[in-house]
Image (cartoon, rainbow, N blue to C red; front, side, top):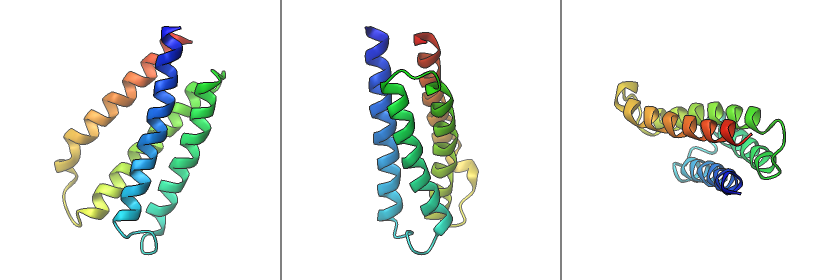
Length: 115
């Protein structure tokens, strides 16, 4: 039962994280000006929904959907940070990107152990 609770919390967390990224895209007033970023945020939310449903139901393809969501989340996060900070160097964002990647990797380990 403990693994089930962790997986359900992971499903809710990825929905929340995707919603936060979409809100940041909307708050940055980039919806009309930057179509690739808007598309990436909308696709991330759709992947989050699919992944959350697969995780909640403990589907056999939940890990694949989670991995795809994690890759899309990292790409959207980098695109958003680069857009909001103008011509800033990617080196400034490396600690945040690495921390986020480690959190996603911990989620992947949780999924692998629970399955």
